[in-house]
Amino acid sequence: MCALVLDTPQPAITFPQPVQRYDAEDHAVWRHLFQRQARLVADRACPDFLRGLKLLGLNDSGIPDFERLSDRLEAATGWRLACVEGFLPDSDFFHLLAARRFPVTWWIRPWAKLDYLQEPDVFHDLFGHVPLLAQPVFADYMQAFGQGGLKAERLGALHRLARLYWYSVEFGLIQTPDGPRIHGAGILSSKGESVFCLDSPAPNRVGFDLRRIMRTRYRIDTFQKTYFVIRDFEQLFEATRPDFAPIYADLEGLPDLAASDLLPEDVVITRGSMDRVAGGWLDETPDT
Ligand code: PHE
Ligand code: CO
Image 1 (cartoon, rainbow, N blue to C red):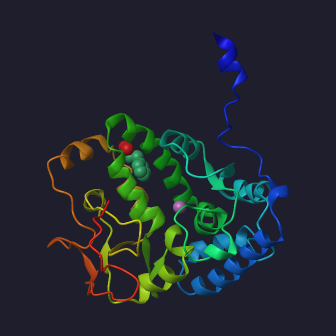
Image 2 (cartoon, rainbow, N blue to C red; image 1 turned 60 degrees about the horizontal axis):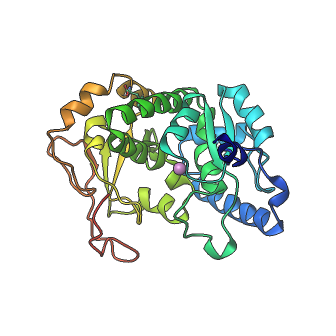
């Protein structure tokens, strides 16, 4: 009975980075993307992200070595990278975060798909997410997120936490003395959205509100209609410190909000025109 089970090797969830599988084109794609995004976000990313880029020594010389990078990151905040093939089952993902291990996809997009990628690759995962893991408060937030994810799974509230992840870790903005700046990885690794999120009159920009975000649907196929802006990472950490179980229970009775909705109690920083023409929002694809 066991022979079949034992003879079938389970693919490992994390494995050593297969560096020998990168070819010259892969490294050239990294160089191109790095140069382009580093220039684009130099005055758009939050200062902590730019400090992280520098501290970790990320540069345009090619796809980074995960072990060397992990050594630097671990010295800063105790986080290490875990090399993965792509999207993970939720509980594997949360277990890694709870152990201060950030999963990074090893492969990079081909030239032909430079700007249109639905799945995360090494450029998104590494350039977008890893610099902020060198920031102590954000590093603690991500670990708490992992623990909270395991709890949300047990409580059947994963969709609430997915919305928080989306509107903070992936698409969050942060207030600075010079105006709003980007902290979300989904924006920082995107050529178009890193300009759109700050410069366009189309989307809403609203003060961070945990319950509000947990009720808000999102779109994965186009730029965001609403961005949530935190004051600082301490605000994010403190707002998410309480036990979410009663919050999940409270929200059960409340209707979901569309990605474009504004509420009377919202702290509106920018009311979006919502009339974006080229490149999106014309169809009526429902929010997730
Ligand atoms: N405090 C949350 C809970 O009790 C855990 C959490 C922290 C979730 C930070 C997300 C971010 O579930
Ligand atoms: Co991401």
